[in-house]
Image (cartoon, rainbow, N blue to C red; front, top):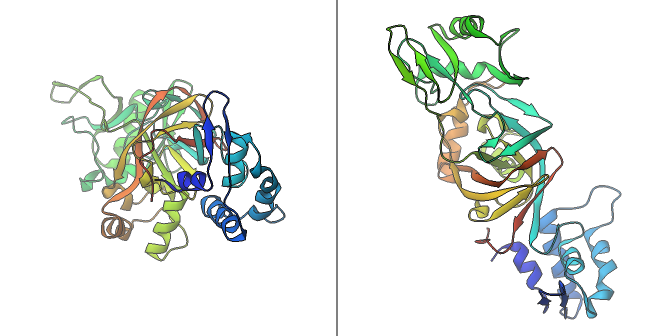
Length: 335
């Protein structure tokens, strides 16, 4: 049972599915009242300076708990105000970063908002960095000669993929091939996944997408904070993990597996599995030094798990500040 479900179980709510209302008999006494407050604070943290405390906000509803009240009002009272979109979706947090990586193995671009398609964030990992002599696709996590790829970054402008290396950038044909080849030190180029590529020896190869686990990768601020403490650092850059969405929450994302989620305008899907980390997390990027201890700590403390992978079943638009909620019915519990 999740912490949210525990909170809803306090007292004796009897939910009427037809009327969307419940009859609720709260436990009596100050001890039980404080217990509800503590759960609300554990779920959602302390309020910002100047805002009403969780205890005060809960107190506004306390007098109504002896009468029939709407399901949404009960949830709001129990979880500390504004924590629930509806009876089915428990709010887990909100989006603070949206990312896409037009070229696999290159740095990505931070977005204000993006279209969420069945294949993930629109424009994400649609292109590959490939060796034009042998057809090998870049794999910085396992091949040292590709490590420098992460010092490049890609973004989408109109219908073009623009690659930048320091102060230089290019977006078309031979100019783009020359830029990435000079940076990598051997002949390579940017090509769309799923296309046929001609090699220098006259042969052709079909470029398959590098990743087929799931289309969406999520990490959370709670996991980032915990990892920072484990590393003895004040900050761990989200870019090390190449997420699509960073969710601000106190919830444990490892407990989201198997739950449906809703985010932004119309977006939704299923959290499928935990993300097992690879050598990509320790490689230097623009503004980030190489740090092998990041991966060592995740392996030692977290059995390589950090973040979660998800599929998309409902397309929409997701942006910074949007709510992220989980569906109660499909939950497998957390923590």
